[in-house]
Image 1 (cartoon, rainbow, N blue to C red):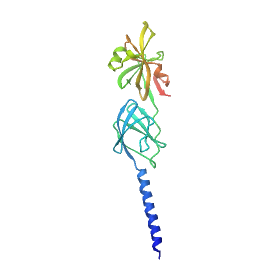
Image 2 (cartoon, rainbow, N blue to C red; image 1 turned 45 degrees about the vertical axis):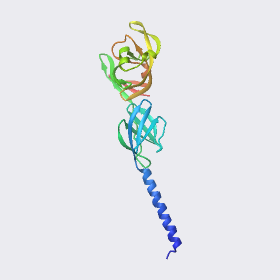
Image 3 (cartoon, helix red, strand yellow; image 1 turned 180 degrees about the vertical axis):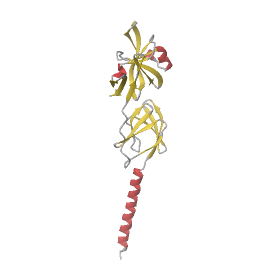
Image 4 (cartoon, rainbow, N blue to C red; image 1 turned 180 degrees about the horizontal axis):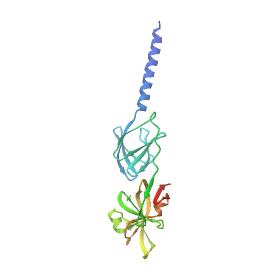
Amino acid sequence: MLCNHCYKIISLFIITLLLSLTINNRSAQAMEVVVMAIFGDMVILKVDGTKHKLKVGDKTPHGISLAEIDYDTVILRRGNKESRHKLGGHVSFGLEGGRDKKPEKEAIAKIWPRDDMYVTHGYINKFAVTFMVDTGATWIALSESMARRMGINYFRGERGQAGTASGVTSLYKIKLDSVRVGDIVLYNVEAAVIPNLSGHVLLGNSFLKYTEITRTKQVMILKKK
């Protein structure tokens, strides 16, 4: 028969083991994460009911860090695992013991020719626009009327001049908060507001230089570097 002292040691061991199993089980559970809002470079997350304001690189007390803001999606990281979350999405973010992360989707844009020009839809500062690819343009270029509709205060931009098919014209150099074409999103992109520009927004090299351009038959494919 076991003595009272041995019973106490065995009981203490069992209690310690149960506590350890409980803690490990909780750490392996998934957290409920909601992307509540995206304001430029700031994101509001709700993690298990608690709100947190994060910028890229910030971390919640749960150990979840904001790795990237990708238009209407954020990429969260905990340890060596990542998870993509859409704005307004309510999902479970797995912790240790969860599945390995899936390979990230390659950011590309496919553009088909239209009347001998490569034209595609996209977004500037989340406003829908139609781009025309212009590999000879230094910047993204848009008209004054387009800039006003987007609420861009271009008069604060740097004044300059540029040569066009119609001659030399004045312009305002500015920075766009975000530009999206296909799956490719860039931030703080240089652009020019040209008073008398007509037609589509020109997708120039201030965007294209961050992509690799290939052609498959007639399709132009942009791939983010």
